[in-house]
Amino acid sequence: MTLSIRIIPCLDVKDGRVVKGVQFKGLADIGDPVELATSYYEAGADEITFLDVSASLEGRQAMLDVIKRTAASIFIPLTVGGGIYKLEDVASYLDAGADKVSIGSAAVSNPGLIDEISGKYGDQIVVISLDIIESQSSPSGYLLTTHGGTRQTDTDAIAWVRANQQRGIGELLINSVDADGTKAGFNTKLIAAVRAASTLPLIASGGAGTAQDFLPAVEAGANAVLAASVFHSGVLTISEVKAALHNQGVKVRL
Image (cartoon, rainbow, N blue to C red; front, side, top):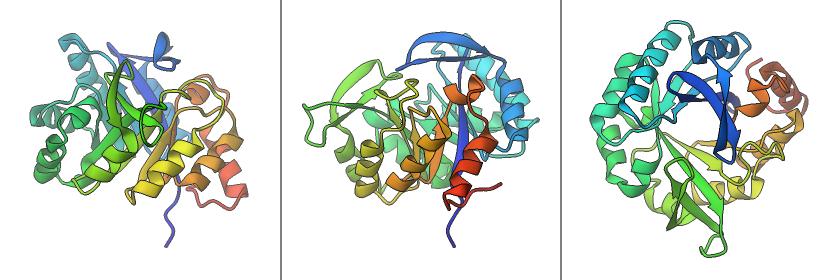
């Protein structure tokens, strides 16, 4: 049976508030994360993703409070990422009410952490978030970045996916840094390149601007589509996106 394509609002959280920028820069305050997550749940979101962009201890404590309050208000999967470097970080998020954890920079620098986490908690909770830029200096044309897209590595993104997909990964979250916040459409070439390299469930992120932008991402190989700006600004609603996909013959949860 074909699984439904999931629509996932993403909330970047800094010191207990939702923020959003363009290409990971120029963050502006959007609102209260619990209120926004609850409104998206009520509007038909299939999952909610929180990404903690605060590096400080104060930011972590604020995030744990946000997770606890959100988990009490929504009844769909909640994924939380940001600042996860060891098993104890995972435990704190899960104990607060998260259903899955999203791991980015630490997975790139220490892929063995994926095995540790999945070995203890199961691969179903592990979402690997890769921030990817286009680069002619890599064989595939794509390089991994870390630390919220601020540090470029010399690691070929597609080669990393091929080398590590047999670890305990439940899903891949592919963030196109070049497309992030531009509302110019998803990077379908990147999605297709990752899909060709891996059979793992794939979440596409970066570039949503209209309801028509989501179908090409699905056709390129995405199992779920994540967006932020278009939902936060009210340019699109979740029901509009699902209706557009449904009308094109894509299975969604209406």
